[in-house]
Length: 304
Image 1 (spheres, one colour):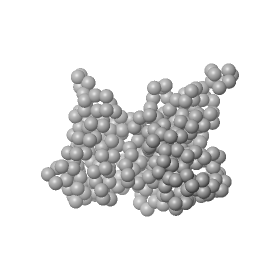
Image 2 (cartoon, rainbow, N blue to C red):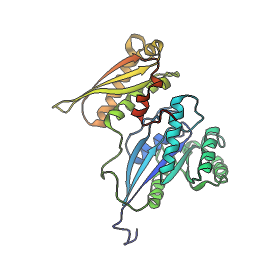
Image 3 (cartoon, rainbow, N blue to C red):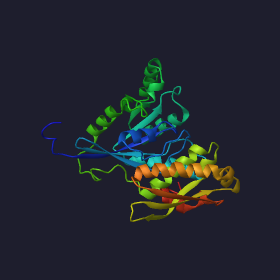
Image 4 (cartoon, rainbow, N blue to C red):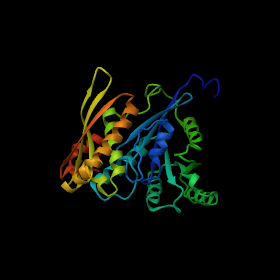
């Protein structure tokens, strides 16, 4: 940094895009240094935009973890994909994350590349999970992507292990425009605690339910009471489409919902730094996927 730059601050947005399960949320959590976006082995986990805030020298980087981009079939999927593309429009930089363990340019990734070309946007290419991929496969893969003509720079890294992530952060910080910081210096995310709490429980449901059910449920935080002793009582409602889904959430003798509650409660205590008493209610609402209010809650366009 030159003497002329020493007193100037920078601030900008970087949109993280990619096919479902490419590792966007894992990369965001690694960049921020804290868990602010849920991570599961299932695709299409991220529904709404999650912003992570990172300081790099005199630069405040605001990373936006977007829903995975794929060919949507349902209203919720259309809204998620529209949200992801919307973030690329306003971002200072777009970062395309690719799972390097997969062969070639996959169909969903091809969709994103074509979309970038149509929108006249360039992107930074991140080949993720390189710790699981042999080097002789990485170089031809990188060459195939670079031949598309939309990538300004390529990074090879492991979001889970952390190798190469710092180089990406420094590079992005150098490219951000001059301007005042938009968040306090100690901010990690703009995600409200109530929504973060709901996302933690939804993650535990994803991890405990091994069928298609997670994609047709939602979690909302209801009553939240803070007590003088520093503890909190949090009530959440899990909404599903059918009675059979409710039975799966509860599990035999209530074992599944108990495991979900205990895991979510423990993680919330770590995140919030205090004792948490979590109460979960499962209810059936057949048409919740067509409820405009849920889309507004996630910051999604119901009419996309």
